[in-house]
Amino acid sequence: MITHVGIIDQDPVRLITPLLDSDIPADKMIFIGTESQREQYERLSSILIPRNIAAEFCVIPDSINISCIRQRVNELAKKLEQQDTEVWFNASCGLRHRLLSAYEVFRSYHWPIYVIEPFSDEMCWLYPADREQQQVEDRIQLTDYLTIFGARCELPEHLVPEALNEQLWELGQRWASSALELGPGLATLNYLATTCRKEQKLDVALSEKQQGYKELGTLLTDLEETGLATYHDGILTFKHEEARRFANGEWLENLVHSTVSAIQNDLPTIQDHSLGVQVYRKIGEREVRNELDVATVVNNKLHIIECKTKGMRDDGDDTLYKLESLRDLLGGLQARAMLVSFRPLRHHDIVRAQDLGLAIIGPEQLGDLQAHLQTWFEGAGGQDHNIA
Image (cartoon, rainbow, N blue to C red; front, side, top):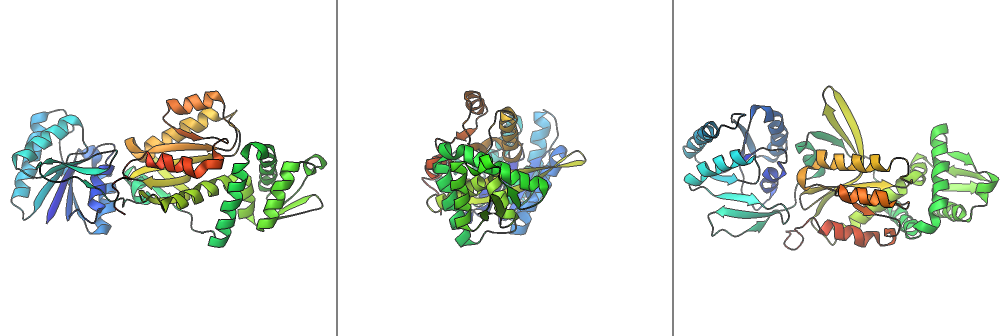
């Protein structure tokens, strides 16, 4: 029997990921934390118990009193010594004074001690020195990841038929590749689809001026050929609500998500992904909802992609700050976020995104979306040694 022990902190993902690796033995996990971290423990244990890994909480004092912390960890170690189990200490997490105190105790028992290196996601042995490093398997799923950070999520239930999804992907690629030329036409199409939403219907009349837009005509022809809409005598009629939403900007989200799926075939560090994830977080008595356009877990790190088909002149800062906030709240220190914008970005927005640590793909790069996304995902590390 193998029992892992680790200290809870604000970013405890690396306490969970090695336990999900089929090549790393784990029968039980003991989480060390303060009473105020019990709710975190409950979330962490809810991920392990369905996977037949037992969980236990060891409470330490919520003070910077080294002797008290060491005494409590010593009590735990003595109890474990009397049990029929091999103890492994995961030294990846924990405030420094707690971590060093616990390390000192576990080292005195000559029990194995390891850390999960954040970038490579490798299990590195501090003791004994002769154990080889190994890559941690990419097993954690989106729902598990969000649970760790106190959020529950709902994934979309309806899946687009494969044949139609392929059509939509090709259509999105065609529009994206001509982003700068088709921009005004797509802005008008977005306006027409928004009008339908506000009036709660699927048909809308084009003005004489709109009927003369060459770029818009190209887009309407594309929608007709794909079977998403009909256009006759100046009346645009969407086939169903999903088609209206596609024209209202979801085409970009669909394109990004389909591209992530395609990259996954070449990059096995992409372990889970979803389109339109509804995320719910408790703030006091309120439950706050956010939608993640595209979310994926790459090399055991959360990646959030915000897709924007409208200009950012009025809400650019809000969009970027919100994306940064969601990245930090839902994914911890290792999470990454990107803005994919169909409309040209102001210099101000580009500089602000860089300051916030956000990646950006603008209309100039959309034609090479797959290459840019793959490079970004490879930046999450792990691809050279990943276990498929």
